[in-house]
Image 1 (cartoon, helix red, strand yellow):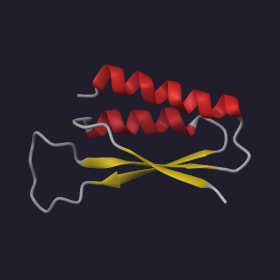
Image 2 (cartoon, helix red, strand yellow):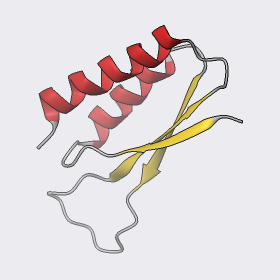
Image 3 (tube, one colour):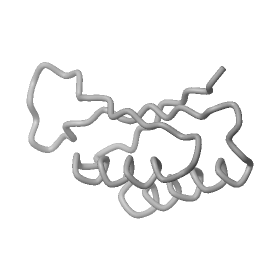
Image 4 (spheres, helix red, strand yellow):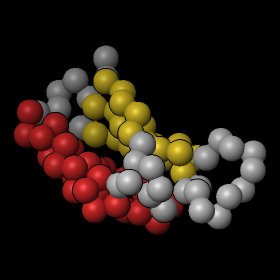
Length: 81
C-alpha cells in the first residue's frame, strides 16, 4: 500500500508550490497533489495553497526517497519561515 505524507512549508507562494510539485513529480514512484487553501477568508499575505500530499509507491528506491528529502530540504531552506 502506498505511503502518503502531508508537506507544508509556511508562507510558500502558489507558484513555488507548483514548482516544488513539478520537481517532486520527476522522482520515480512519487505522485503529488496540491492541497488548496481551506480558509474561507482571502488573505493576500497567505499562500493560496495549504500544502502537498506526497504519495510513495511501495517500490520506491532508497535513492528516490533520498532525492525527495533533498528537494524538500532545498525548498525549506530557501523559502521556509
